[in-house]
Amino acid sequence: MGRRQVAALVLAIALAAPAGAEEQPADIRIHGGFISGREFMDMDGLQKKYYVAGLIEGMLLAPAFGTPEENMAWFHACTLEINLKEMRRYLFNYILERDDLWPNRNPAKMYRAIRELCQAHFKAPQEPAE
Image 1 (cartoon, rainbow, N blue to C red):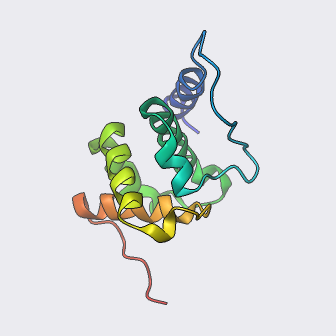
Image 2: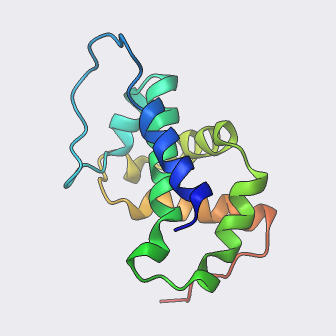
């Protein structure tokens, strides 16, 4: 992992724990901590921002867990062009329009939404048909 990636990860972690923060609603657990669409919609804007930042950082760390770098090129390009606010807004609308995602805790829903957003802006690889 390069210095820029480590610095970005440290910054994201530091920003996720603002000093003097008021009591937050229910904690988000790390293991099994993916949230439902309902929980995402109930978050305030800052909580959504940090949650989406964590999703993006997690996806950027995929090569550390064996994903070949070449499979991530489209995602790296996308994150250089699309800002966090735009991703957060897209995820909000993505969940809002899909009732089946409201009770769903599967993290794949967020991955699919981010992939669709990136495909709209870049030539991201298409998902294989099932």
